[in-house]
Image (cartoon, rainbow, N blue to C red; front, side, top):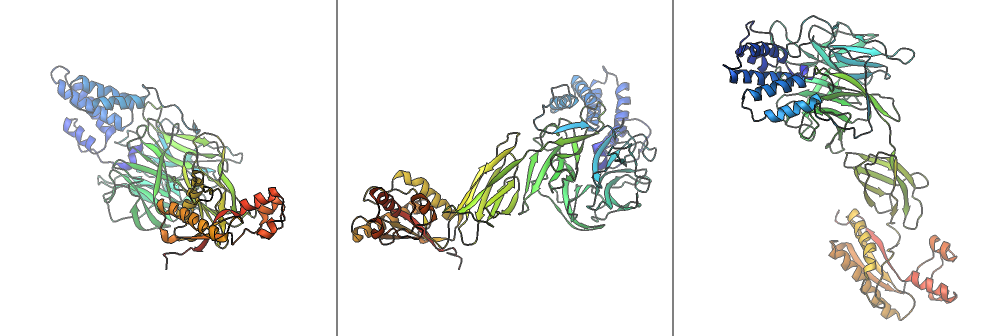
Length: 622
């Protein structure tokens, strides 16, 4: 059962069944023992003469079975408490909750692509939970209270034998073999369970709960080392001088640097929290709480990791389906955790917890987890899961503003899911990044000698492969850059509305490069006097700057200049491809006069342009 690692097994203090002793066992967390005492009292209590007392006993019985996760019995006794007039404002919701968990109300429909199946090679008539993969995906360790575990004592909390750690291994035909105990060097008369392993598989960390000679003992984390095919005698892992708080459910980060665990020690968010500490073998140093993004005022338990470093844990916080639900959490580069609730069928209205993942799966995500769903006695079973892969990618090219590919340009993508990834473009300027569904992303591309460009998009939630395309066009910091599609009234400096999208894009470029100062220039064609064209182009350049200033750009970052017809455009590769003019040719009056009327029209149009060039990229940084 889930509760065993969170509670202390306490020896019975009295053989006589009284209300006082039954409540004492209940308060101590001995729910199985308490339920047996309350049932005796329930049968002895006269329904007519002691109606209110019988209602109170029924309420305690409902709570005992609720904690033991035997939902149908819990619902029955909660209803009896209600029938006998026991006063509890939560009774109705407790009954509804137990009915839901017992399956009397229609369960959740599957709303994810996960496929789950009972892993019956390890499941017995008792409880099996917290699987942990080890080796080359060929050893699966788990916690069990089956009838063959070490010792004969019965837990007063669960009513089953104390748990041991067992293992199933694959044979030469890649078939899972019959499970067996990992031996009495680790398994004792107390509770052992929730194993995890160092990256090399040579150290196992696990939880021990129990008491010796009637002395209360807290739940602790132990470790053992592998020697050939066996494990050494388990030893206590010293985490803290705190001997009262719970320290349980170890999980080692994929890089082996951190031990994650569960504790109710001082400094948490409430209930049991997930903490982490630096670890080197059996040496643990400073530990810290993961904070209120992961932890809640309720209970967080059973941390574990996928091979790619995503943390998974269980919680009974608000917003779940019921009982313990599994959540994923990704930590970004700033130390902020991004938590997501997993959908059904991984989560159900029962308790779902204790995941482990195959390490060598390339396409599909595969592994095992624990749940007490569809079990009349509330026992946990181990389920396998498979998540068929969906390929969701973002790809594109990085160019300069003339359309030339930029190799070795940086493309960074940051997602609200905590993703922060950087890649370099290939020789043809292309890039490809795998992303998640239903996530907002911000992208930035840059390269030495060019300004940065930003893009934003949200991937949709469709359960199918998807490819998104985002191209970047990076302005040079050393060459003038044309601002396309800027239009003015004829012989005037007034901006036409069709210009706004292009100027808004220039505004965003300045926002993305906050320390850049530019010269904003306007140019005219060959028609008219230079004096008139200088004045016209100056007013046009000023109009563009005023538009940007009104949107919030600091005026010190903008230098308006009108060149009139003094600087005609030089033919570049893109112009040459369109008009078959020689690269490097100046579109001055002498050259234009050699063209036909249609070509003259195009040349004049090219010369009438708005440009910017970068003056500095460090404005305000000195």
